[in-house]
Length: 305
Image 1 (cartoon, rainbow, N blue to C red):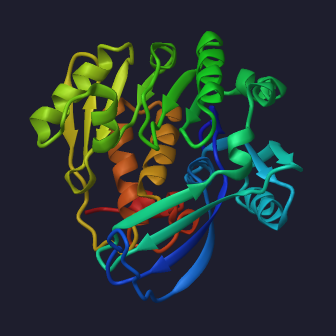
Image 2 (cartoon, one colour):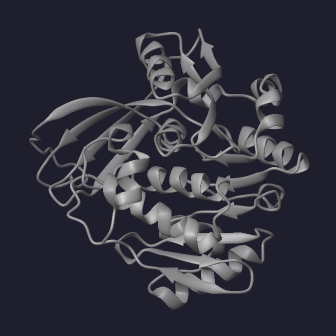
């Protein structure tokens, strides 16, 4: 287990999942199959991934004062996550995500943020101790942008490594980008940030270089089955993916990000950290669900493809 401390600030949702043969077109009704509910939310998924992979992790989020919120807190404690800074909102419900997964393991997701949308800058200030003692801070975009920006700036000023998973895709300010140690967009998100359409590895590298020119030290563009592109400001390297029979890709990006910061906390180089993250993500897509798909450290360590 790493001695460095990881702080995840982000969302917690309950995922309501339906499996179906194909994703519906606009106006189409599809008869689905299995329905189940799982704990989810990008922040929570990433915190669980960090914990299962041996990281020392604290999670800052806001849930509703309802059964979903109580269940989430119970899960955090069971996973070994420090939930001292999980806030309860008495006015807004816990976040939920409606997820449809097809036979090819592709998905579409609609999120009702609920209490996540009310994680405020004031809540961050109440969590300042967690930021002060952290070594790495991991953020996503399912909470208010002003909260994300303030968290990144606060952590950067305190000398922390700030990693942003810029999902869902959004425009990002120079204030936020300039506070980041690393950013981990997928192709859609990289296109949104850079303004460059990604069609192949060359255009992905061009987009990564454009994003780096905006003030980010390290850019990792995840490319799905093609792996990930790593740009450290000077050199660019593609890390290949591992071929797996995917059944559900819902939380693959979250598992990647959790694993990535664990590897960074252990002192691994950027390419080594991305290889470790690709392994963890590859294992996760062979399982159904979000947090339930997160592998344990021993599984990743013995994984060899």
